[in-house]
Length: 364
Image 1 (cartoon, rainbow, N blue to C red):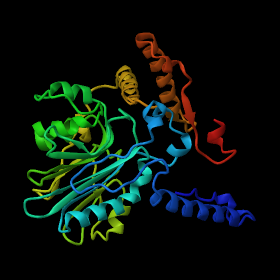
Image 2 (cartoon, helix red, strand yellow):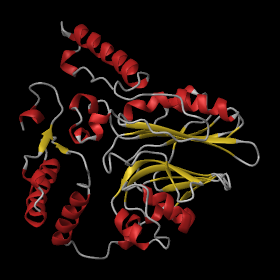
Image 3 (cartoon, rainbow, N blue to C red):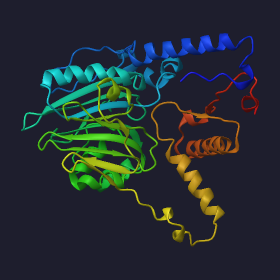
Image 4 (spheres, rainbow, N blue to C red):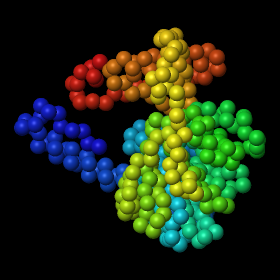
């Protein structure tokens, strides 16, 4: 979204120049992010029912992925997905429609893309497509991800902080295909079904398709960190996407925000609230203020978010909160180096700020 002209520029001689630049920014963003394929990704056709991932050139696979250019990543926010369930289109037509509309979220995932189409017993078709921004397991964690028997496919935007704990508690200890933190979701669904979302610690929005039953299961994290929209297609199909653009472009009749802390099943055709914390009620606040507990909880929350196989940084606003986050990260990295000897933890923490030139927050 282009920046808004400051109030002091309205009526100013340079206000027209500002508006012109803003309009150019919008045009370039729309053309370059919504429609243009990633320059480094080879986008070839994918046979119906086959999931094929397109990754970066071989040089990236040899280790350059960890140093992906800042210019390319500047246009990416997080992964993006599109899912269509119970469409009346043919497999070929649905595949083409999904690939076409998937381009509208392509700017969210510059590191690879994939698609999977299934045909139900009733003749209806469903599809999941994914655009990936690689954070954990960049070389093999491409999506869609599959259950061990490949009957269930998962497309997800998120990070699961307790994935190792969940993996160790699964009854089926068949080795995973990837080291992705998100693969545990589809295997967890095999064992606990609709309770999957309530057991995840992280930020997420995902869709699981069951090829055997035709069932669809979708869920969003408790407070809505990761975006997801849903809508109904003109043929009665159900749509899900990281952004509203594919749904609007497809002519969905009731595009709406998928509410945080809820899951959806195609069999029940309704949203179910799974996140019901006790602290929503004032009566639950019975303990006195424990500043030490607040401190430990804050440090733990920052530390678990350092889970990444690629470089990360911190966005500084000039306020107290972001400064505390940066301080905790620096301390955690020093401690981690002393424990594990990871040389990268000795490198300076990358930090960024956004604002107008000469603004007080940038000076801070």
